[in-house]
Length: 367
Image 1 (cartoon, rainbow, N blue to C red):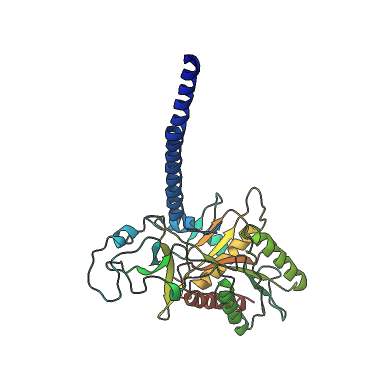
Image 2 (cartoon, helix red, strand yellow; image 1 turned 90 degrees about the vertical axis):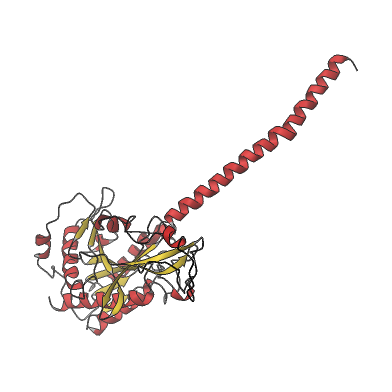
């Protein structure tokens, strides 16, 4: 073998060894590091969000109304709870494990106010003085109220499966429970989701002598199509029951802080804890028209005035925002958020009954 061939093969061997023992392991280490960074970033981002896919949320309304904003409420932070000192306390644990987050009880006040996230000017006196009932909204013998749920699978805090039932040493009095990172906030069991609250709502209206229909269809099994599916149901009911004057879309809200703690909007009515409620009004947008949103807002002002009579702190401020939420189907189409994912089903059911009482009084006293 001549020297030139030997030298070429020697360099080929060196290059091969460099690739096998140097470049490839180096690239593997770089790739592994990138994967680890991506995983940490994704987990951090999910920790900051902790929302199911496309979960509708009115955190903006909470942030705009609360002086410190939704992310700076002055409550005990998750970090301070986790760093609480160890003491002897039966049933308590010394720290919150990773993946477990607190539920913070709060009351969102100023029910007479309107959170307006649109550019439209609103005169509260004009709204409150609007003649009611509007034309064609008088009560007859046939059903006049339809209750449905665009997001029927929205569920509530399940205390039976909640972690850290004994509590955590050093926790704030505002912390009333804990939930697991991977716990579900939806249920297809209609006895455990907002459909159950809707049933209480309907029974209360019927007991007051107001004929009511309850659509229990789960429109959100494909979440992205929920409002379209709900619109199909509304149109079908209006065709079969032209006597319908009020359409109530009953939801459950989501209030989540940046540290993943859930907020539990709560009032106390007749000595019992009750979820707070919030009316949401769509003013349309450039892409979807809502031609009678002002009349709809005036009707919500009327209902809000009756909700406020239930008890102090029962109603949150109304929320006017862009969008229409199927409220283009009639002046009497309204959306109510009953509690949040931090409330229990019992608290939400109480709120549903009280909200229906207020609606019944509004209808019966203005016939």
